[in-house]
Length: 284
Image 1 (cartoon, helix red, strand yellow):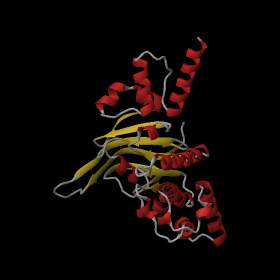
Image 2: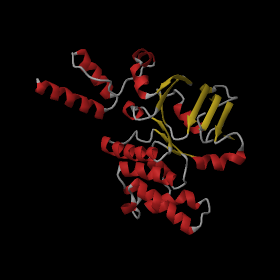
Image 3: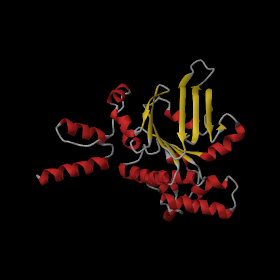
Protein backbone atom coordinates (compact mmCIF):
# COMPACT_ATOMS: atom_id res chain seq x y z
CA UNK A 1 0.00 0.00 0.00
CA UNK A 2 1.29 3.45 -0.89
CA UNK A 3 2.46 5.69 1.94
CA UNK A 4 0.22 8.71 1.50
CA UNK A 5 1.47 11.98 2.95
CA UNK A 6 -1.80 13.77 2.10
CA UNK A 7 -5.32 12.40 1.71
CA UNK A 8 -8.40 14.34 0.65
CA UNK A 9 -11.92 12.92 0.75
CA UNK A 10 -15.09 14.61 -0.44
CA UNK A 11 -13.54 18.08 -0.11
CA UNK A 12 -15.90 20.99 -0.64
CA UNK A 13 -14.98 24.61 -0.09
CA UNK A 14 -17.39 27.53 -0.31
CA UNK A 15 -16.27 31.15 -0.21
CA UNK A 16 -18.79 33.30 1.59
CA UNK A 17 -20.70 30.35 2.99
CA UNK A 18 -23.89 31.65 4.57
CA UNK A 19 -23.78 34.88 2.56
CA UNK A 20 -26.22 35.94 -0.15
CA UNK A 21 -23.72 35.08 -2.89
CA UNK A 22 -21.65 32.04 -1.88
CA UNK A 23 -19.11 30.68 -4.37
CA UNK A 24 -18.48 26.94 -4.36
CA UNK A 25 -14.82 26.58 -5.37
CA UNK A 26 -14.42 22.85 -4.68
CA UNK A 27 -17.26 20.38 -5.23
CA UNK A 28 -16.20 17.05 -3.82
CA UNK A 29 -12.51 16.40 -4.48
CA UNK A 30 -10.89 13.05 -3.65
CA UNK A 31 -7.09 12.98 -3.85
CA UNK A 32 -4.19 11.04 -2.34
CA UNK A 33 -0.57 12.19 -2.60
CA UNK A 34 2.11 9.55 -1.89
CA UNK A 35 5.34 10.59 -0.22
CA UNK A 36 7.95 11.64 -2.75
CA UNK A 37 5.50 12.32 -5.59
CA UNK A 38 5.75 15.35 -7.87
CA UNK A 39 2.15 16.32 -8.56
CA UNK A 40 1.07 19.02 -11.02
CA UNK A 41 -2.31 20.71 -10.52
CA UNK A 42 -3.59 22.41 -13.64
CA UNK A 43 -6.81 24.01 -14.81
CA UNK A 44 -8.18 27.33 -15.96
CA UNK A 45 -8.72 30.31 -13.66
CA UNK A 46 -11.55 29.54 -11.28
CA UNK A 47 -11.11 25.78 -11.53
CA UNK A 48 -10.28 25.52 -7.81
CA UNK A 49 -6.61 24.55 -7.91
CA UNK A 50 -5.31 27.38 -5.67
CA UNK A 51 -8.14 26.78 -3.22
CA UNK A 52 -7.21 23.11 -3.10
CA UNK A 53 -3.55 23.99 -2.50
CA UNK A 54 -4.47 26.19 0.47
CA UNK A 55 -6.64 23.44 1.93
CA UNK A 56 -3.66 21.07 1.90
CA UNK A 57 -1.81 22.95 4.65
CA UNK A 58 -4.81 24.21 6.62
CA UNK A 59 -4.72 27.80 5.36
CA UNK A 60 -8.31 27.05 4.40
CA UNK A 61 -10.50 24.54 6.23
CA UNK A 62 -13.06 22.36 4.42
CA UNK A 63 -16.65 23.44 4.21
CA UNK A 64 -17.35 19.70 3.94
CA UNK A 65 -15.18 16.62 3.59
CA UNK A 66 -11.81 15.96 5.16
CA UNK A 67 -8.10 16.63 4.59
CA UNK A 68 -5.41 14.62 6.39
CA UNK A 69 -1.69 15.41 6.46
CA UNK A 70 0.43 12.62 7.96
CA UNK A 71 -2.83 11.28 9.35
CA UNK A 72 -3.66 14.59 11.07
CA UNK A 73 -7.02 16.17 10.29
CA UNK A 74 -6.69 19.81 9.22
CA UNK A 75 -9.90 20.70 11.08
CA UNK A 76 -8.18 20.22 14.44
CA UNK A 77 -6.44 23.42 15.57
CA UNK A 78 -4.00 21.48 17.73
CA UNK A 79 -2.52 19.97 14.54
CA UNK A 80 -2.07 23.20 12.58
CA UNK A 81 1.56 23.88 13.52
CA UNK A 82 2.64 20.33 12.61
CA UNK A 83 0.64 20.42 9.37
CA UNK A 84 2.07 23.77 8.29
CA UNK A 85 5.60 22.64 9.11
CA UNK A 86 5.01 19.47 7.10
CA UNK A 87 3.48 21.21 4.08
CA UNK A 88 5.10 24.51 3.11
CA UNK A 89 3.62 26.75 0.43
CA UNK A 90 5.22 29.31 -1.91
CA UNK A 91 2.91 31.81 -3.58
CA UNK A 92 2.98 33.58 -6.92
CA UNK A 93 4.71 36.85 -6.04
CA UNK A 94 7.86 36.43 -3.90
CA UNK A 95 8.02 40.15 -3.06
CA UNK A 96 4.75 39.85 -1.16
CA UNK A 97 6.29 37.16 1.05
CA UNK A 98 9.52 38.91 2.08
CA UNK A 99 9.70 40.44 5.56
CA UNK A 100 13.44 40.87 6.24
CA UNK A 101 16.17 43.23 5.03
CA UNK A 102 18.73 40.57 4.04
CA UNK A 103 18.55 37.20 2.32
CA UNK A 104 20.00 35.50 5.38
CA UNK A 105 17.45 37.06 7.74
CA UNK A 106 14.63 36.16 5.36
CA UNK A 107 15.59 32.48 5.39
CA UNK A 108 16.00 32.56 9.18
CA UNK A 109 12.61 34.18 9.86
CA UNK A 110 10.50 31.01 9.85
CA UNK A 111 12.70 28.67 11.87
CA UNK A 112 13.63 31.48 14.25
CA UNK A 113 9.96 31.82 15.18
CA UNK A 114 10.01 28.15 16.18
CA UNK A 115 12.45 29.06 18.94
CA UNK A 116 15.28 26.88 17.62
CA UNK A 117 18.70 27.04 19.31
CA UNK A 118 21.17 29.37 17.50
CA UNK A 119 23.38 26.51 16.29
CA UNK A 120 20.40 24.65 14.78
CA UNK A 121 19.07 27.88 13.25
CA UNK A 122 22.46 28.59 11.63
CA UNK A 123 22.65 25.05 10.26
CA UNK A 124 19.20 25.32 8.69
CA UNK A 125 19.89 28.73 7.14
CA UNK A 126 23.24 27.65 5.72
CA UNK A 127 21.73 24.46 4.30
CA UNK A 128 18.78 26.27 2.66
CA UNK A 129 21.06 28.89 1.13
CA UNK A 130 23.41 26.19 -0.18
CA UNK A 131 20.58 24.15 -1.71
CA UNK A 132 19.08 27.19 -3.40
CA UNK A 133 22.40 28.58 -4.63
CA UNK A 134 22.12 31.83 -2.68
CA UNK A 135 25.05 31.54 -0.25
CA UNK A 136 27.01 34.32 -1.94
CA UNK A 137 23.98 36.63 -1.68
CA UNK A 138 23.23 36.10 2.00
CA UNK A 139 23.76 39.79 2.86
CA UNK A 140 21.85 41.15 -0.15
CA UNK A 141 18.49 42.87 0.16
CA UNK A 142 15.78 40.45 -1.06
CA UNK A 143 14.14 43.16 -3.13
CA UNK A 144 17.40 43.79 -5.02
CA UNK A 145 17.55 40.24 -6.37
CA UNK A 146 16.66 39.13 -9.87
CA UNK A 147 13.29 37.48 -10.43
CA UNK A 148 14.83 34.01 -10.49
CA UNK A 149 16.82 34.67 -7.33
CA UNK A 150 13.67 35.90 -5.59
CA UNK A 151 11.89 32.71 -6.59
CA UNK A 152 14.70 30.60 -5.16
CA UNK A 153 14.76 32.71 -1.99
CA UNK A 154 11.04 32.12 -1.44
CA UNK A 155 11.69 28.39 -1.74
CA UNK A 156 14.76 28.57 0.53
CA UNK A 157 12.70 30.31 3.21
CA UNK A 158 10.33 27.34 3.24
CA UNK A 159 13.14 24.77 3.04
CA UNK A 160 14.62 26.16 6.25
CA UNK A 161 11.45 24.96 7.98
CA UNK A 162 12.35 21.40 6.87
CA UNK A 163 8.98 20.58 5.25
CA UNK A 164 8.21 17.14 3.86
CA UNK A 165 6.08 18.64 1.10
CA UNK A 166 6.50 21.84 -0.88
CA UNK A 167 3.51 23.44 -2.64
CA UNK A 168 4.21 26.02 -5.34
CA UNK A 169 1.13 28.05 -6.23
CA UNK A 170 1.99 29.57 -9.63
CA UNK A 171 5.44 30.33 -8.17
CA UNK A 172 7.06 30.61 -11.62
CA UNK A 173 4.30 32.65 -13.26
CA UNK A 174 6.24 35.93 -13.39
CA UNK A 175 9.63 34.46 -14.25
CA UNK A 176 11.43 34.73 -17.56
CA UNK A 177 12.50 31.45 -19.22
CA UNK A 178 16.01 31.45 -17.73
CA UNK A 179 14.75 32.20 -14.22
CA UNK A 180 12.04 29.56 -14.56
CA UNK A 181 14.64 27.03 -15.66
CA UNK A 182 16.74 27.77 -12.57
CA UNK A 183 13.77 27.28 -10.25
CA UNK A 184 12.73 24.06 -12.01
CA UNK A 185 16.29 22.75 -11.75
CA UNK A 186 16.15 23.34 -7.99
CA UNK A 187 12.80 21.57 -7.76
CA UNK A 188 14.21 18.64 -9.72
CA UNK A 189 17.03 18.26 -7.21
CA UNK A 190 14.63 18.45 -4.27
CA UNK A 191 12.45 15.80 -5.88
CA UNK A 192 15.45 13.51 -6.41
CA UNK A 193 16.20 13.88 -2.70
CA UNK A 194 12.72 12.57 -1.90
CA UNK A 195 10.71 15.73 -1.27
CA UNK A 196 7.03 15.68 -2.16
CA UNK A 197 6.19 18.50 -4.60
CA UNK A 198 2.79 19.89 -5.56
CA UNK A 199 2.98 22.46 -8.35
CA UNK A 200 -0.01 24.60 -9.30
CA UNK A 201 0.74 25.83 -12.80
CA UNK A 202 -0.67 27.04 -16.11
CA UNK A 203 2.56 26.08 -17.88
CA UNK A 204 2.13 22.71 -19.58
CA UNK A 205 5.89 22.27 -19.97
CA UNK A 206 6.20 22.43 -16.19
CA UNK A 207 3.34 19.98 -15.71
CA UNK A 208 5.13 17.54 -18.03
CA UNK A 209 7.99 17.30 -15.52
CA UNK A 210 5.72 15.89 -12.81
CA UNK A 211 5.08 12.26 -11.92
CA UNK A 212 1.33 12.83 -12.17
CA UNK A 213 -0.98 15.54 -13.47
CA UNK A 214 -4.40 16.36 -12.03
CA UNK A 215 -6.64 18.73 -13.99
CA UNK A 216 -9.43 20.56 -12.19
CA UNK A 217 -12.50 22.00 -13.88
CA UNK A 218 -15.34 23.77 -12.09
CA UNK A 219 -14.19 22.54 -8.71
CA UNK A 220 -13.84 18.88 -9.61
CA UNK A 221 -11.09 16.58 -10.84
CA UNK A 222 -11.73 16.24 -14.55
CA UNK A 223 -8.68 14.28 -15.71
CA UNK A 224 -5.55 12.77 -14.18
CA UNK A 225 -2.68 10.51 -15.12
CA UNK A 226 1.05 10.35 -15.73
CA UNK A 227 2.19 13.06 -18.18
CA UNK A 228 2.53 10.79 -21.23
CA UNK A 229 -0.92 9.30 -20.83
CA UNK A 230 -2.42 12.65 -19.84
CA UNK A 231 -1.21 14.55 -22.90
CA UNK A 232 -1.92 11.61 -25.20
CA UNK A 233 -5.66 11.95 -24.47
CA UNK A 234 -6.33 14.55 -27.16
CA UNK A 235 -10.12 14.29 -26.87
CA UNK A 236 -10.04 15.01 -23.14
CA UNK A 237 -7.63 17.91 -23.63
CA UNK A 238 -9.95 19.45 -26.23
CA UNK A 239 -12.96 18.95 -23.95
CA UNK A 240 -11.16 20.76 -21.13
CA UNK A 241 -9.70 23.39 -23.48
CA UNK A 242 -6.18 22.47 -22.41
CA UNK A 243 -3.13 22.51 -24.65
CA UNK A 244 -0.29 20.04 -24.83
CA UNK A 245 3.29 21.15 -24.08
CA UNK A 246 5.03 22.82 -27.01
CA UNK A 247 7.28 19.80 -27.62
CA UNK A 248 4.27 17.48 -27.84
CA UNK A 249 2.47 19.82 -30.24
CA UNK A 250 5.53 20.27 -32.46
CA UNK A 251 6.12 16.53 -32.60
CA UNK A 252 2.48 15.96 -33.57
CA UNK A 253 2.76 18.51 -36.36
CA UNK A 254 5.93 16.90 -37.70
CA UNK A 255 4.32 13.45 -37.69
CA UNK A 256 1.45 14.86 -39.77
CA UNK A 257 4.11 15.90 -42.30
CA UNK A 258 5.57 12.42 -42.46
CA UNK A 259 8.44 12.68 -39.97
CA UNK A 260 8.75 9.43 -38.02
CA UNK A 261 9.13 10.33 -34.34
CA UNK A 262 8.80 8.29 -31.15
CA UNK A 263 6.47 9.45 -28.34
CA UNK A 264 7.63 12.91 -27.26
CA UNK A 265 6.97 14.71 -23.98
CA UNK A 266 9.79 17.18 -23.32
CA UNK A 267 11.87 19.59 -25.38
CA UNK A 268 14.97 17.52 -24.66
CA UNK A 269 13.29 14.41 -26.08
CA UNK A 270 12.22 16.36 -29.16
CA UNK A 271 15.74 17.65 -29.82
CA UNK A 272 17.24 14.17 -29.37
CA UNK A 273 14.63 12.63 -31.70
CA UNK A 274 15.26 15.25 -34.41
CA UNK A 275 19.01 14.69 -34.16
CA UNK A 276 18.41 10.96 -34.67
CA UNK A 277 16.20 11.68 -37.68
CA UNK A 278 18.90 13.89 -39.19
CA UNK A 279 21.54 11.22 -38.62
CA UNK A 280 19.37 8.57 -40.27
CA UNK A 281 18.88 10.82 -43.31
CA UNK A 282 22.64 11.48 -43.58
CA UNK A 283 23.37 7.76 -43.35
CA UNK A 284 21.34 6.99 -46.47
